[in-house]
Amino acid sequence: MYLIAAAVLSVLILFALKLRRKTQEIDEEQRRDVVQAVGPPQRAAEERGAGMPRRRRNLAAAEMEEREERKRMQELREQERRQEEERERHLEQKQEEEERQAKEEQERREEEEYLRLRASFIIEDQGEEEQLTEDQDAIGRLQDLLAEGSLTGVIDDRGKFISITPEELNSVANFMKQRGRVSITELAQA
Image 1 (cartoon, helix red, strand yellow):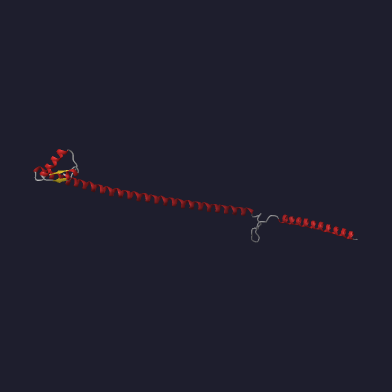
Image 2 (cartoon, helix red, strand yellow):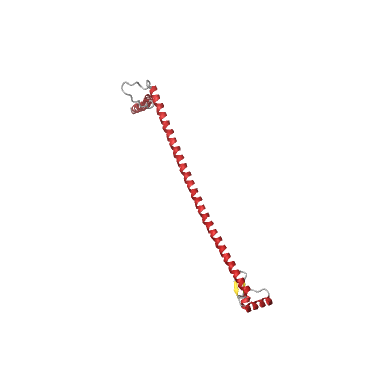
């Protein structure tokens, strides 16, 4: 009796598993059919007023409107491009103007520096000429006094006048004759 119950029970379990498998397959097939029936998402229907023809009938007008829209978009892009070119051109002009002004400023500073240096050289030249004439006048006066005999002295290698008495001049001359060439320090010690 247990054997019969076990056999019936195993047949029932097999039947339930088979039934369950079939229902899963049917559910899967139905799901596929629904997805195919629905298809890809439909485009939103264009709104149309009452009595207006459907899209297919109004296709030429819609295409014309699309063309006009594309044309407007193209014109807008062209206008933006022109504005961008204008901005770039304006920016380039501004940069060129700044560079030109900087160059002019640099040239002006260089010209001022040149004029200042030129003026200082002219002043130095005039000062040297006046100094030179003053020095020449002083040397001429000393030579005149030496020639008259009212002043005795020597002019060293640097152009400085050293006033000495005739006795001192004779003693220096004798010292130099005895020793030959001498330095100032040797003269000062003797």
